Length: 277
Image (cartoon, rainbow, N blue to C red; front, side, top):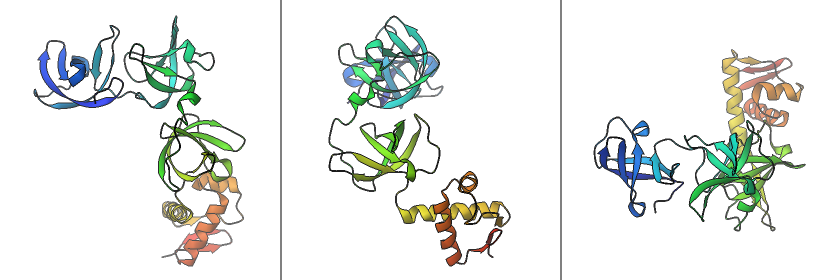
């Protein structure tokens, strides 16, 4: 089904002076203006486009990719305000409206906000909402332990970081299990640690202990080779220095070098670790 606010593949049906008309099926023929049309094409070619409403409320196509589509969350900068709300830069020429009624607090131009993009059923306009809680946890979580998911960092708590899972649910990354800096609005991959009996979801950034240790051991080997075979790091080194050089916790570092030592890949000396031939 072809939907406003989402990407789709449409065929070129004809060319006019100001662009190309594409067959959008139940939406009719929609214009792809010359400024975003490909230079070379043939009638009948399929193009990947995004559909939205122009300033005259006509359905129009673009080959530009917005920062978020309908049904997705994004961290967008406010670029202007008007009589109906604020306007956000979402990567298209026409800015995205964040109505006053959908603002969880007053919007300041120049600042970025985590918002949900949706289609207003009353007039089929694409708008945003910063009242994100009302769009999450609407269904029981369908995840299995260890499943890879897409995350957007959405805030912090005393426990750690709140993250939006696959544009559908809240989850938590515990601060004692996160060994890198995370930023509000950041997109990254993560994994389901467990779904609790109350449907709360615990997350991790690593699939499992063995996989992560293998990854960290490989990182140490690469750093050693880049440094000429020696790193002045030991199990006595300050944790902040280990993290600054290797982006891993001291605990993970000690486990990784222990594994590399047993595999006779490195030697562990009083002044650091050395790569063995």
